[in-house]
Length: 151
Length: 151
Length: 151
Image (cartoon, rainbow over all chains, first blue to last red; front, side):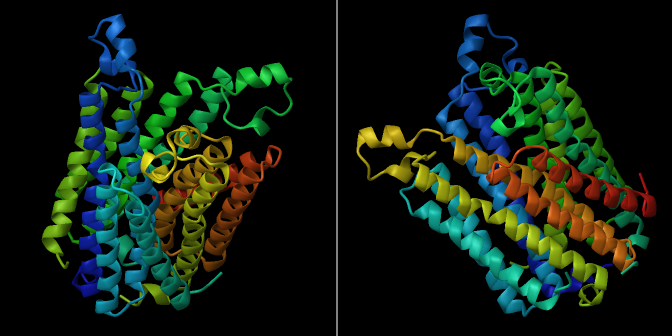
């Protein structure tokens, strides 16, 4: 059992997986922050103590809230596949240096993606950071399929 | 191979992971139920047999359907990270009692979250149950990073 | 470590998991393709070089883009649970033939689901392919809970 956690590649995977998951989960509180500061809520019970007129105002959508949600959704679409493919990839026993390269580039690409998305940086900063993450995941998926193909 | 499934902590993780995944997947049929009863569909092919006038009515959004979808999305944003972090956490070999506490509190918090969301319970019931789940996941992520840090 | 990847059931799981993840991730570029060809963007920085009038046109939603996004979201809601439950299921040591049946039917159902969704095939093609995937995942979750129940 503890054997897995003594493997260097698996330790590296665990570290980077934990970091990108924590980053992804912080989008939740960030959405809440934008909801409160921009006055844009989705549920009636969230504005229960307000007057009828205020409620109507507060239950509108706001571009900043929607932006954080798109960023969060993009995380789900990319970080979750990375976690699953990365786990299988770590189990195929790759070289530590090669594995670390994959994990580090992915983590960096997703941090940059969030900065580019929330900071509204000019393109292609967001597009490129997204693409780099996809390429890393595809490279790991290729390794998994190469070392364990059984259809 | 079968060794993992003989480990008490891993068995506990498997049980709780299976339960929260089943809960999350039931949001799919629940969305379908609200779509049918509220008459609110997203795809034209879903209302193909209706008249043109009825189609227009049925292809509108409905607040109850959107509520279930928000609940489902919140599950994805929180249960999926729990599953990945929990898997790594179970592999670090924690005390069974401590691990069970994490898993049980998380499962309970997500069940309460769904009840609070779909039942439109007054706040802070939904907010608190969401927060408890986040704290449990962060606590497990901290354990993973403490026992296997390799950047 | 490498032991897992010598197990036939685990190899079969890795192969099918990699395939459905790659399929899911291709929805990203497909969304980008529909955004460009339909002229429907979500972020201002994506249309920064256009005139003010063109921007307004390009920042509208388009039904084809929303359809790909719904398909992508359905993938997240179903393929991610399959990956987690499938991993635990593979660790319970099922018969290779039974496991292969589960994995193959699931992979086929999700490929069909995408074809039915993007191709706007008449119902119940999309509904049935979705349902088959759910049944496979529930069957695996039942196996996991049967062989390792610790609440």
